[in-house]
Image (cartoon, rainbow, N blue to C red; front, top):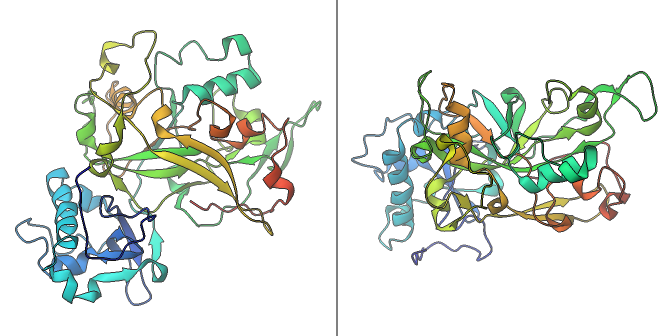
Length: 385
């Protein structure tokens, strides 16, 4: 990673370094939603930067940053969106930057309200962690044959509910549905008592395609704008009763939470790593070249009401068996089209041992093992992002 020095004062442990510069949508008391870039504990107002001439010669429409979502900006294409990020980066490292004399371009994150960064037309959730899939198979099927026969041949996924995806921090209501109690012969309707998180990441489509036009693994990267953290809230008791024969429904569609900042694939490029060996050999359309996994350290913290935070999982995105270019190639191989803003989630990201399990279902092993941080439980779960 090249050495970059900014004239801004940024905490060394900030997630928003000069190397990151993610995009998001924010608002303040004085002004409604608009596009911004996070740097340290501040936000650069991109509409102000545009008026200041930071992006001259890029032919950016004058209203593209004053919108409810980033879709129109993303639709300008990577040659433009990449240059916007690079020009901001360059200006923040330039002692003669126009930003230095224009504090109105900076908004403290503490004074901003974050919003959903893109208008999500469609949402797909994959099931691409072999450790997670194996754990689930051991719990509920034959431990000796934990993976279903198709799992190592296709990136398994399902279409979820885009309308209930919300930015991190929005309170989540505990869902209701049908549950089959243990040893019962008839289901009952009740509030879920087994609400779970799922540690995931999701990527955002940055380029439209037409129906009947598959995306190859070679071209997939050009269609991926960036990534967010993703929490696929799951009502395990509702899910267990409804799952067969058609898969997730009410146990999943009540809410999912995402981080409000989109980290671009260009910012993540230094963290590319080789993925796991895939055996048996995949179909030709799933063959890919290069390093397509990413070394992104992830953790989950739980803060029960009246108690301090406990970190319950340390995982990593590099563990994924099926990578993003394979997921997108498989998603479109039948001719399915994708649109700017569509979101594709990874599925629960679990690692090699219990410390890296990405869901409470695994950490507690289906409720058979206690988790100390849950001694004080809250009836109203909230996502922390």
